[in-house]
Length: 139
Image 1 (cartoon, rainbow, N blue to C red):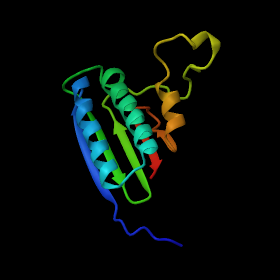
Image 2 (cartoon, rainbow, N blue to C red):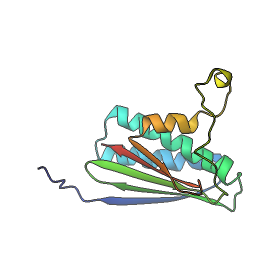
Image 3 (cartoon, helix red, strand yellow):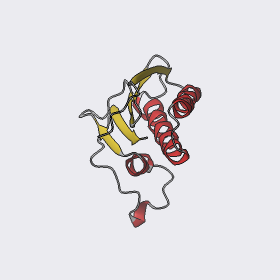
Image 4 (tube, rainbow, N blue to C red):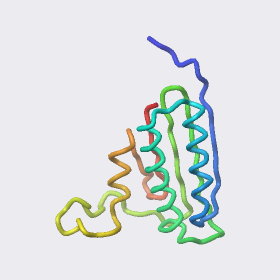
């Protein structure tokens, strides 16, 4: 059995609820990808998912309220990266989302984010309230 020799590293960001804040998250994803030599495919999936989730947290969760924060935590070791994104909003019903692959929804411009994230992340879990999501990526 191979034991990971790389210690777990913790990262935290508190982003103001404005879209420009996403740049700080993108910089952190790049820093972690470089540090842990994450493959290009996993890096692309991670960047896509985190960008989508953080954007949703800013727009839908915190309603672009500059007094509300989006808190992002990453716990990374040599085998996996676990990201948690939490907003200060009311949450949402992530169980009863419309299927973006249904014929009546194919031309909708919105409503695909959670569907995409669930397919790109190795694991995706929401808290009961729906204002926090945990994403796991094997690295």
